Amino acid sequence: MGVPRIKRSQAGILVIDVQPFFVDWALPDGDPRREALLVRLEHLLMLADWLELPTVATFEKPTEENGELPDRLEAVFPAGGGRYVKNYFGACSEPGFRTLIEPLDVRQWIVAGAETDVCVLQTTLGLLQEEYEVFLLEDCLFTTEPNPGPALRRMYEAGAVPGTLKTATYELLECVDALPWYPERSPGFPASFVAPEEWPPWDSSL
Image (cartoon, rainbow, N blue to C red; front, side, top):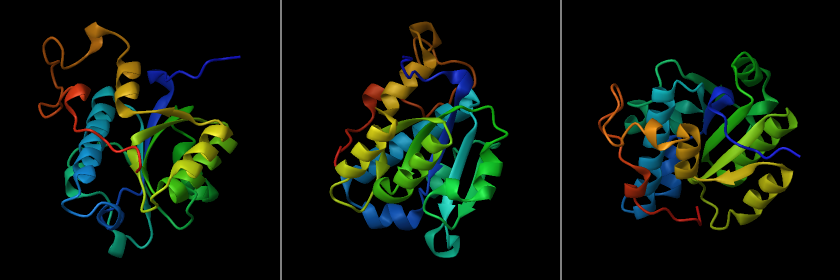
């Protein structure tokens, strides 16, 4: 039996419905969990861009009300990243979404976003049904639901692999010599990227 491991050559980043409306609803200004989440999402997108990982963001309709990415995430979203506005909670229920991701050289999706128990859950189950591997970044997920545990357990029992952004970062980079911020910053690496050990603590209840 194979052991699920993130492989850079097969991995893509999927950011589900990280829209201002949902961020503000789940984590209003002043909630310390908001900054911990947004810092991680920024670093996820910076890393995806630097590693040239295929990256897709979904947005739930209507974007006129929900928005797309918050400004600070828009600023670091990879220039070649894909975007998809969806009607279904589970993106894989939409042929247009499948048309977008199928040409990408991806068999593994590293998943972040909202809401853990709705769109993340249903999209993850759809990806697993399509025989993709899914690696959930628990510290990059959020929801208005105070107890996301049942949704997480359902996804893990279906075959998703638990992890955090720190875990995925080191798994993608593999060795000390490949760390772009250590011992000297690699050429072209974002100056605002800080080591995972310096990110603000995250709350597992999200």
